[in-house]
Image: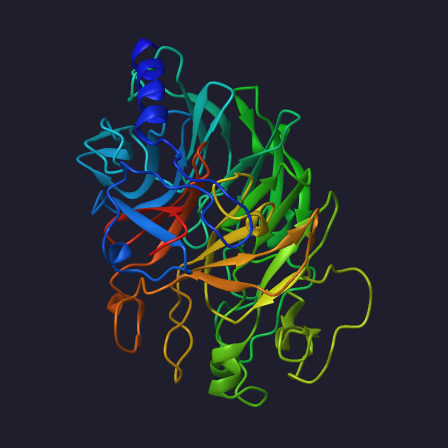
Length: 432
């Protein structure tokens, strides 16, 4: 590990903090960073600047950053047979000088934990030992969990860890609203929804054990959501959180109750605080952010006007516009950004396809302030402009789509896009 130790010392010196203050002034200025004159084509709040770490590594999903600043990115399509990209900045300017690829699997979830790099293909969790590793692990991966359903939709397996030895995994529901005939106009929903036996749920496993299976070793921690690619343990609050993808096609499946504008705006993308045993109401209900109410889904007797009555389902702690597609979530625990960001949540919205006749939306990173475990204010757009100029009518027209987030040990925030794998690294400098 000599190289990593030496590199870490060089990085500290090369990113010397020459100014530090509180309030609205600069928190830190990193002199050696190669900041992009236009922030790499995105817009940021006043006082923030971006380094473009790399222009392209491929079809990126989520990412993680080690204590030395090396970046590991999951890929959805393999690069010459490999499913993970590893990047290194050797001279401390923020730009990656080395990119290497490894791993036999593609997937979404990726995280460093207790000396291992955990990686999540769609049907398993594996881990690579990082002991003695320079950049790319050379040992074969160990199987941590197998037995996940092989499903065509909502198969991504984001992962997160608590401080007590537990691993949490999303298993998305493989449908829109658990209809008897999937995505068929007028088809009723199945009740109870059989998919909730294994899917539409967060499962908990022992992070220190290998050879586990979903059926024998999994514990269903919470249930009743459609899909949650944005899943994160908040170490500052000692609690799990997720942001779910809401259902689609209200107007095409139930035109007697919803028009195209209803469908463009509904249902909300829901941000949940997740406690053991929680149920969030899918597929029986959805949340209408315009009314501020949980509503019955039309597959289960709803008509767009009928609220859910009862206390079996949790309400969101915050509701976002429909079809923004939340794909990652992190809680900020650094001190590089101003104090008002501490403890708050950054969410990457990938953008979606189901907002016609309105333009597509999302394609941004938002920030939500927190006070302990609870939201303490309205969300704000933190980073925008990823999709490029002009009106976006389909995801294919977007130049970039925010997909993954990570926080470095220095408090900078990384954003990766899924279209080409461009990575931005954000600092607060106090000036533009």
